[in-house]
Length: 299
Image 1: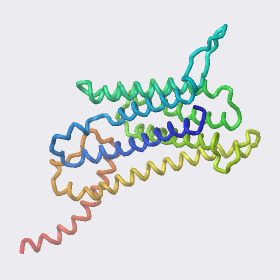
Image 2 (image 1 turned 30 degrees about the horizontal axis):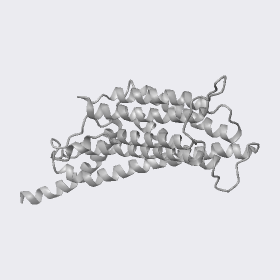
Image 3 (image 1 turned 90 degrees about the horizontal axis):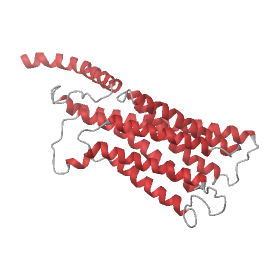
Image 4 (image 1 turned 180 degrees about the vertical axis):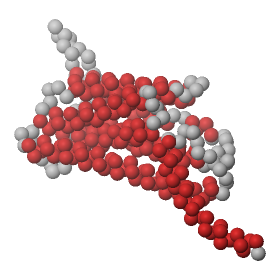
């Protein structure tokens, strides 16, 4: 598991999951502004927890990958006396991916099996998974040094910050700012995990990083900061696309009247306030046009 693919595949999944969450946050808000669609035969397909199913599938594939990386499969203890534990890091990876599967099962159960969706259950299971992930990451970094220790320390930092956000979400699950912080940290965790694979196993220059070179150690942190900025710009791009999408859809909503397309209760307050600010200038621009056309109508 301590190879390039062992870091790149989980990182790619986390990054794609962060993109999916960012799109869902804004698409759900925009759909609540649009008129309700007619419920057809395929309406139930939109209610399926695709994120939960993806977690189950991705976690299962990663578990199979970890098991296939060891010849003869994972063995917990040897047959010598006294018996010794084997493949400690691989068992830690297996535990991480098992947590991903269980978290996906909770999402599917909450969204599709329970009579009513329980958001607190989903957030609680996710927070518990990251509590255990943090413990595994701290233990996983023991024995490493130099570049590897620096890379894993930054991963632990992201997991710790994400854990704090998820813990606060247990008491404030509808806070828009926490949603965005969670999404940004998931993007950073995924992209940095991919970068860790390149740094440790496939350096772009073709030469391994030097643990004794202070410049290499400093540039690890510099690259991490670049990842944070790029992921924030990616999140801002999704937000900008949603903004222009709303600008395009808004004229059609405006003709329907306020009763047919009200602001939905599930829209986060900051986003709702922004949409109201967008609406106000458009009304002010239309006021002179209505004033000029009224004499012509009376004539």
